[in-house]
Length: 142
Image (cartoon, rainbow, N blue to C red; front, side, top):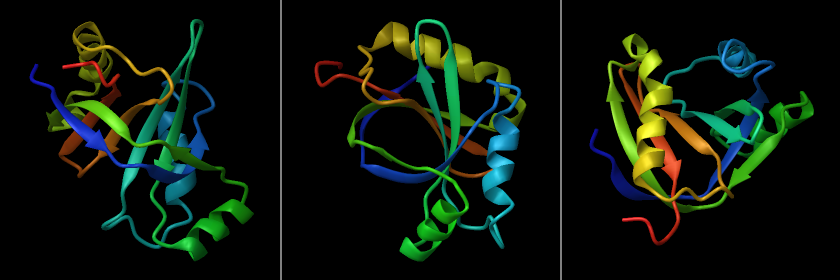
């Protein structure tokens, strides 16, 4: 595993919460996708908020513009902002055949870096073949 440190810019996302992690994650993405004419060029994220007793997962979409953001908000989709900050990034190629490696990969990064609990763990779906796992880390992590 070779994670690199990056500075993740601030994100503003249209979100849809998974009814149950992880079984409901796909449905959360489909709820967003069903309101789009095309998925081409769109940026999707998965957000994981972890507490002592559970994990909450939210599918996230970067809006194309304010009009689209307002349209989704009117449909009842929350707008979520995530502060910028340092993240450990691990690229997972051919990720659709390695879904079972996502959790253990986050776990390995957690063993290596100091986590910033004020921001969620993130999955950035760069393409159908490339997934970036983003673990928010403290400024002291290196």
